[in-house]
Length: 140
Image (cartoon, rainbow, N blue to C red; front, side, top):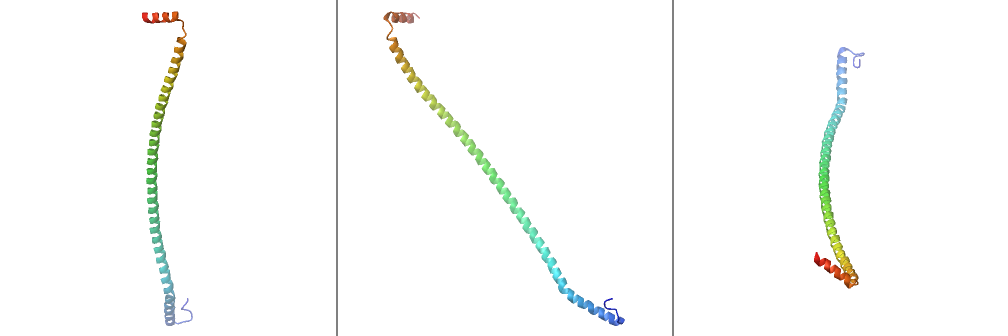
């Protein structure tokens, strides 16, 4: 109805066209702005998608680096554990040899002391008993 009421056909046509042109002029800046916003939105989405992809890639690379670092640390820990085990076994062997040497020294010392005590006691045996011991020993 907008341009037709109370007008002749020619006036209505003219008025209708004029209103359309006016609306078109008014609409053009709005349409342009809408188109700009649609383009900005599309660009922002594309940029966001690129940033998201880059962030995902960076996170994946960091995760890969951390996994490699964890594997390296695990290898180093295993190597260190093996080295410490080997060193502990070597130390245990060294301590065992040292204890054996100390035991042998102590045993020689105790045996020497016992031998000296026995000689002293044997020296107190009566000569007849010594004769019997010597005779028995020589007959064997």
